[in-house]
Length: 291
Length: 311
Image (cartoon, rainbow over all chains, first blue to last red; front, side, top):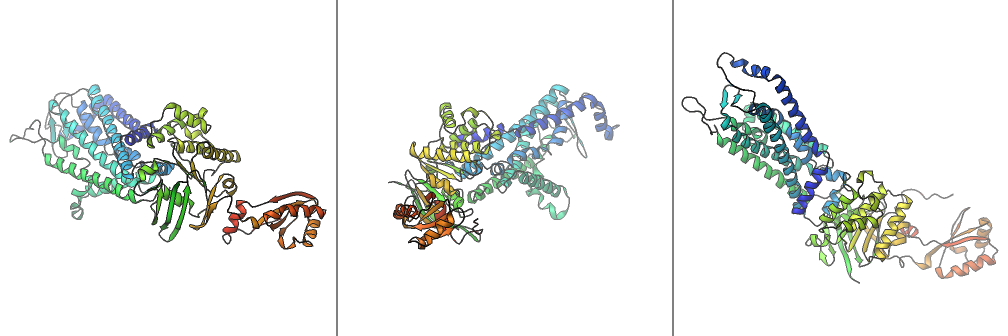
């Protein structure tokens, strides 16, 4: 099994396609960082315009922590495509290249092969998120410095002390990784049905877009479905940045407003991962390989 | 002689299509086993079932005395295969592909083993080149090297000469003969190129529409009493007139400007040769044509797709 995992990782990281995602993330983040470095003051004024006269803020608002949050909001919508580029290609790509039949005629079970491939695509997803964390958080901290984190929510403002931010990012990135592994599992599941990777990649993104729209619509008939859709929970990393407040309406350091919501979201995502992986193994074991 | 493969009552149904129907055959140790049939006859489906890529609807496959369903892992460790096209990872070099598939086959290859294998298939000087730069023939040879890297007892080659030029076909033929004679491998070769199989196979199986038509030793499959003899003379019209007036008249099969065909007992060929000389027929050639192609067309008669054309 370890040999299989090593081989799958070797194949992933020897393919030029793998590095598209890393380059794309680096390019996007660099552009945002460059823009904010040049014109951060205008962006801060834009953020503050709605609450202009009601409060006064000292210090550096446009710091590394806020910029990382802005980038996560922007990028985590697009990262599923980069994840699907690899995961949706894991089986369909082999079928397309014609290597699947050779692979399956080797002395390993199909279940072992699928588990090795899924594990390898999970490693890729984790590395992508680590890369995102390095560029979006650490490089931003280096370029823009650190300070208290000032977040504008739809109906309120959150101010998090700089000493209370870093662990929240650790939690947020861990949760985002779980969310992206769910996307990876979906792409992986779809890849067993196709003989080229375009179909499963497009199907993965279509399902995410479709369910995200359902998750966003406020129509009573769909509301009952929302808690069970994985797309509802993909953005639950934001919960790490909502704090409890005391009776004086002051944020309590080290607190999360609704930790149960994070746990529930994580459970829903884990159930989806197991369901996609289990279905992949069950179907693939019965499949005749005709490619 | 030990039986390496024993297939019993193998059947595969795809919805309404029966691709393989109650097929039984056996392959002995050391055989070069020619697996013949027209396109769509069920050869590849059978081979895929033998490699557990397709699940049989009915029937049983035993290899090395073990049931494939129960001992898949042990069996496949001892099998090397090229299935239709020799597709490998195009973004990797020949060396990397060979190393990768060797590890998948359960061995840790040394550099020497990999280079020796590449040497055997004539790719040593292209070891570091990416496979995407290879010709079809080179890919085919690399596919064979991959099938052999773990030193399997049984080698299954499904249409190994597909897409090759005449030199490539000859190279593969020589390689199969070398594997059989020098390395004592058991080889199953499926093909629809009959003259290629004829030159290498020790035993043959012909299938049609998923069913076995005939199985046996290549040397004894053909009936020597029904040997087709092709005669070419300087004046075929004169020769035909002479033959029609002789004891050979009943044995005449066909004639045209190029050749005269007779069906005779193999033992009578020297007599025929003497009679032709006695009839002052100026002979250019006299050739027994008990080819596999003739035999194949004979046993698959009725399945001809296009009318026979002759000048």
